[in-house]
Length: 79
Image (cartoon, rainbow, N blue to C red; front, top):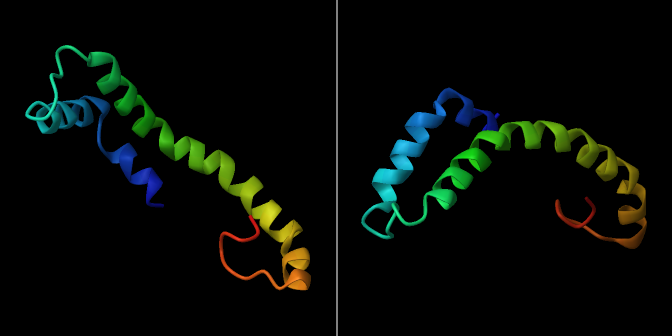
């Protein structure tokens, strides 16, 4: 759910916001490639999370018994 909130914001608004935020810290006119890359990465994030969440859940279920038998606890221990 959190990853899909980026879909509410259009990419032009996101790019403009990043431009305004970063213009005091870096020279955005000399590095437009990184700005476009950051916007495209953020826009692709919901699709990546949707695609990888099901296989990650299946791996978690697959190795749950192994983790229990070895005494490994935690959310990141057996993904």
